[in-house]
Amino acid sequence: MLRIYSIVLIICGFCFTKAQNLNVGAQFPINKIESINQSSNLKIIVFTPSLYKTNPYASMMTTSLNYYFVKNLAFSSQNSPKIDVIYIVNEDDKWSKEPQQAFAFSETSNQNKLDGTKVFYDESGKIYNAIGLKPFKQNSISNIIPTSNSNNVLVESSILFLVDKNNKILMRDNDYRAQGEHLKPLERLIKRTSKTDNIEVNVTQNKTLKVGDKAPDFILNGPNYDSNSTEKLLDDKSTFKVLTFYPAAFSGQILPDFTSIDTKAAMTCAAQIQLIDHNPLLQNVKNYAISSSTNPLLELWKSALRTNNMTYLNDENYTISLMYNSYNRLGYNNRATYVIDKNGIIVYANPDLTFEDEAKFPTILEKIILNNK
Image (cartoon, rainbow, N blue to C red; front, side, top):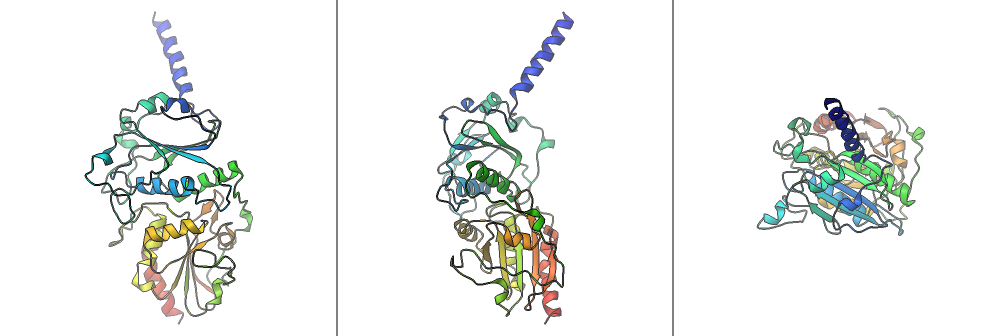
């Protein structure tokens, strides 16, 4: 009897493992999610621990997916793909119990953008178990990742799937937290799959730059410029210029509070831009924030960050990024910062910026300007 029992355990164990095959290339069991009709659209399916205020990245995640793929602002083509965005939340709808629900950027509590999406609150983990995923509530504290600006609340990363019209899994991301480093590869794969706005980048053209080099010049393209503008970066010889490259619009913690600088906090796109924009030492310098984004996305990003001294540039095909050694072969900009003097010479070059570097940057820039007068 003991031998038979052992064999049964092995067989059941095999079946259990096979049931959890949710890797790239496998079929996603979409029929396990009740009320989801068969769709010929691409599908982004997000399993998340919470959409409540205790999840510090929830607002940015829902906002970015909404603007990029529900409203299709990530695409410049008129033939943008149709994409269904679905959230499976491993808790109850805590927002429905709030006396007032706020969805505007001016609010600091609920900024989730859920219009046009489907949201399933699965507190018991019924859908998770049916699909073959372990509910977040069953995970041990050792697997939970702490985040900055979260009042020490520990929140796990979401699990994101990209599924094609035949329910084949094209991408699985186990660490989705609205990071630009994860958002841009998702966008890139969607564009390749749908054959829409797909851009091929020659990474070998990444050019290493150092202090003393002549800064590569380029035409300024973004919400502040007409589509036929020929204005170039180095045309203005009246002041120093700061080029800040970052992975993506709408990534990182949304609207962080920088009344004080936490040098141990995680680096985010919002932090990178706001630290430069809000510092009084940099008000007489021309600041440019550069990413591969459409102008409509950049307009909304500027409004969300409430910046006053920052010009947003759209480096759609990563031409500028390649000039400044910022492009990452995974499909986004590395966090790089350059300072260019009035004569067009690079006087500061940091191709791999950290939060600690950014916190010190205003002081560094002040010294650079004083030494180059």
